[in-house]
Length: 285
Image 1 (cartoon, rainbow, N blue to C red):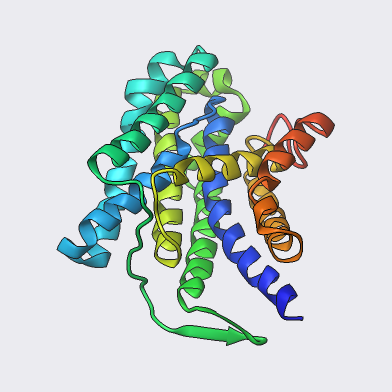
Image 2: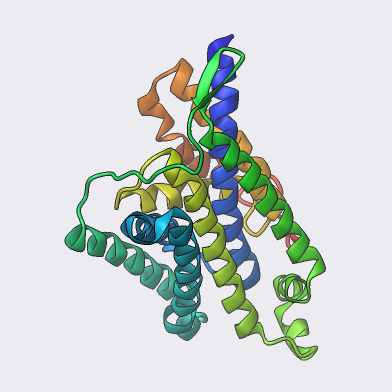
C-alpha cells in the first residue's frame, strides 16, 4: 500500500512541476512554431539566481528578483536570437541549444558543478497514509494548480491571450486584423520563461539545483509536449501527470536507473506511433 501511495504523491508533485514547464514549451511552439532548446535554462537560471541572492536579500526577495530577471532573459532571448532567425527553424534549434550550453558552462566556470539547495518556504513534514513528505510539497501542489488555472484563464480571456490564440491558429489572418505577430511571440517567450521560473521557484527548495539540470528539464518537457501534442496546453498538463506517475512507478517497482530513460522512450514511441501526440491537432487552443 505504502509504495502505491508514494507513487501517487511523488508522481503528482513531479507532474505539477513539469506541467508548468511543458506548458511554456508548448505555448511557444504553438504560437511561433519554435522549438526552444534553451527552455531548460530558464528553470536553471531562476534556481541559481535564488541560490546566489537569498542570503543577501532573503528568500522572498530572491524569488521576486529571479522571476523579474528570467522574464527579461526570455524577452532578450527572443529579440536577439529567435526573432532574427525565425524563418530558419534549423538555425533556431542550433542557436537555442548553443545558448543553453553556454549558460551551463558559464555557471560551471563562475560557480561550480556541485548541487546546491535553498531553504524551503515552510518547514516540517506531513504524513499521509503512512508516507511522510516535506510540507514544501503542499506549496508545490497549490502553487502549480493556481498558476496552471491562471495561465488557462489568461490565454482564453485576456486581450493578449486572445491574440496568442489568433496567431497560433492563423498567423496571416491575425496580422491582417492588426495583431503584431512579433510582439505577441516575444510576449509568449516571456510567459514561457515565467512558467519555467515558477517551476524552479516551487521545486528547487524541495530538491536541489546543479548546472546539468537544465537538460533534464528540457528532456522531460520535450517528452511531455510530444506525448500530449505539440502546441496543446491541455495535452501538456494531461501528459505531465501520465509521465510523472510512470516515472515514479518505474522508480519504485522496477529500478530507479530506468526511470531516467522513460522520457526518451516516450519520445521515440510517440513519434513512431502517433507523431501528433494524444491531443495534437492543427488548431490547439
